[in-house]
Amino acid sequence: MGRAPQDTPAGVGTYLLLATTMLFAAFPLYWMFVIATSNDEALAQIPPAVIPGDRFLVNLDEVFSLQDVYFAASLINSVIVSTVVTVSMLFFCSLAGFAFAKLRFAGSRWLMLFVVLTLTVPNQLGVVALYIVMGKLGWNGTLLAVIVPGLVTAFGVFYMRQFILNTVPDELIESARMDGATTMRVYRSIVLPAIRPALAVLGLLTFVATWNDFQWPLITLGGTDYPTSMVAISDLASGNYVIYRRVLAGAFVATIPLLIMLFIGGRQIVRGIMEGAVKS
Amino acid sequence: MSTTRAAPASSGRRAAAGRHGHGTDPDHRRPSWRDRLYRFDMRYMPYVLIAPFFLIFLVFGLFPLIFNGVIALRNYRLDDPTLTGWAGLANFRQLFGDDDFWNALYNTFGIFLLSSVPQLLLALIVASLLNRRLRAQTWWRVGVLLPYVTPIVASTMVFSVFFSRDFGMANWVLGLFGIGDDDPINWRADKLHAWIAIATMVNWKWIGYNALLYLAAMQSIPRDVYEAAAVDGAGPWRQLWRITVPMIQPVIVFTVILSTIGGFQLFIEPMLFDLNAQAATGGPNGEWQTIAQLIYKVGWKDLNLGYAAAMSWALFLIILVVAGINTLLTNRLSGGRSR
Image (cartoon, rainbow over all chains, first blue to last red):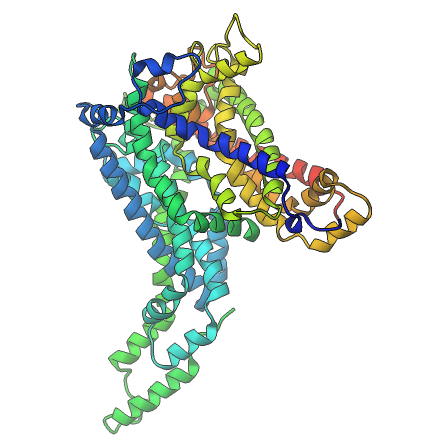
């Protein structure tokens, strides 16, 4: 009777409600696939179509062969941007996190406070100026404009610092120092192996966020021939007569990598989000 | 805090250097290359490690935000590069008389309310479901994250079709309940319906994510609190509102701030819900044009970057104020009595 919720075995009602939640969560994705595999009539059916058709490859072929959208190139761009940003985030944020967690240097507390404060700065509100800065650098319209601002974030530094502070023992670092290990050596052979779980979490979250980013890529790459896949999908959906089976076929393809990530790294993503919550 | 200053290591090193010394007094000889490297490593390496973050943040994060304030005070038109110089407060003055701005602010606020309140309430309920002892626990948790990993661009396209007037799934479902049978709802015709459609997309996307934040906090509530409550005869519903919610109040405040910041920068959903997305007007008469969308339109369609910068600075201040008010309100509502 007097048990905490987390010790109470869930009843049928709980499972039913959760199953309904799942249905709502998954249905738009499923239906995206239904339309992506159908012909034009499927959209205008009453009751609506819920069974996938057999035209997926045909629709895909249409999307990929569109002359003015270059969908394949946009997917490659998304892969490049997301991969470079993710790798760089992991490297630079773990380095900075290591410095803040385990090294002593003048001003470290103030600098860390600065990092924490920057967590609250919404970068998006500087887009006009960022566009002008990128213009001066000559980067607008190139992938550099999308990649460079994402190379490190305050969140990444903060996340790594917390993890390293809690998991890497000081004694281990000290004994490595005794043996004459340099800072980078300590990072490589002690810190890096210990923080692999955090790297996985931060990597997955970063990849998802970068892949899905839209506003900044639209501003700086919109109108070019080779934007990222999110901008390309919005291009598919512009014009007077939108062919939704194409749009959703493209959208579905651009979602697949993230579904695979959720499938492989779901446990890590969940843990990352939940850990972030308790810390804050 | 840690100590890796390695004083013992340096004395050990000096002894070693003495062994290899050229007969000079070890304390007065010039530092060897290795010593210097070591000194550099201890003293300056930490700054090298944190430099990438500070360089990139200062150049591409903080500087643009401040520079935005400068641009807001200047004339800056992409279509007329000759028109330069200070505009003073002209851009901000224009803002006050700009119906589009107030309309967009009104829309943003409306959509924010329709999305954040149900979103956080439903997240709370989903979290309390997930907080039971479940079979295949991880599976359920990963499942609620499906919307989170789905690109908003992609899901907005799907919802955009759901909310079409004639063959949309939304009207079909409502029709099953006898709503709008002879006169199907035109979701893009008026503010309220467009707001509901857009808020639905936002809610769908973020409920699972917030539920996980709540779940994390719920699991750290001491179990005996519930035992005591049960002894006093409080049922599950009462326990949720009287114990769980006040105990996870800090996380609730956190999610309110997050959804305020996110909600006031809403861009993709209103943008792509429009059948004529390129225009960025948010409906023929701006029925659902948000501020982020208006900033995009003013800056990159009307090519008036100075005015767009003024708007984004105004939005920044509005977010600060609203987030502050929300924090106070949430504190009052969910935890005032817990202290």
